[in-house]
Length: 86
Image (cartoon, rainbow, N blue to C red; front, side, top):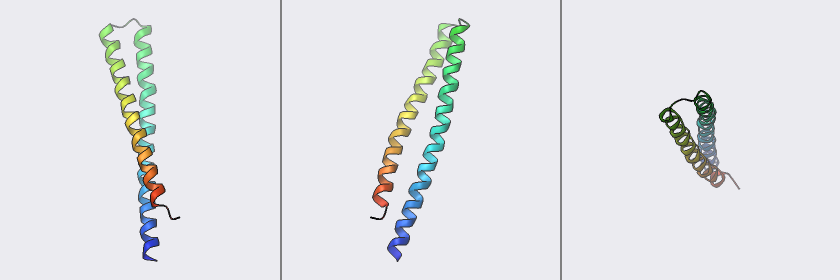
């Protein structure tokens, strides 16, 4: 019985971590769209190349964070599967 409680706790932790990961991902996706709109607006209003480049760097950083989030998600799912009772 104690092992089932431990397995359940592990699954609860894994599910909580996955939910946290998805909340971060949602924020990053929303941020990516906002940054994309900002870049588009800068281009349409013929902003300086410096401003456009800065906006593009912010987009790139957001995409890197999304990639990291995806890698974390995969690791969390693998851990959850490993903790799940057979």
